[in-house]
View 1: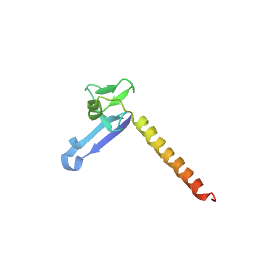
View 2 (view 1 turned 135 degrees about the horizontal axis):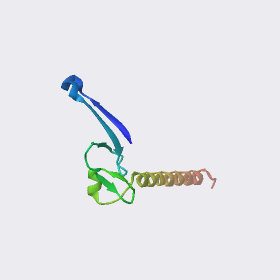
View 3 (view 1 turned 45 degrees about the vertical axis):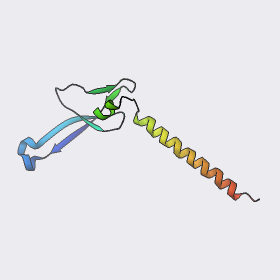
View 4 (view 1 turned 180 degrees about the vertical axis):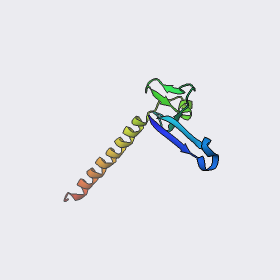
Amino acid sequence: MGYLIIDNRVAEGPTGLQEYDTKSCVHCQKILKIVKGATEGNFCMPCMGPVCDPCMGKGVCEPSKRRYLSFMAKIERAMHRQQFFDRINRQPT
């Protein structure tokens, strides 16, 4: 959870100051404004967290943590592969 202040008082006068509590989408990390008096919005049951409209529209639960771990696994495989080929190239024939 966070806090957002939009200060546009120069153009709009005193009504140009807007303040919101925020939360982030558990799938894409997009910042979501919490509007007082509005419904809570979308919620992902497997992740147990808030979800933005575009992610909810996908219909698939893909948390950002899973994408991050998949990306890190690809990097580790590439590093191991490079180390393997470096060892092969260093050995005398």
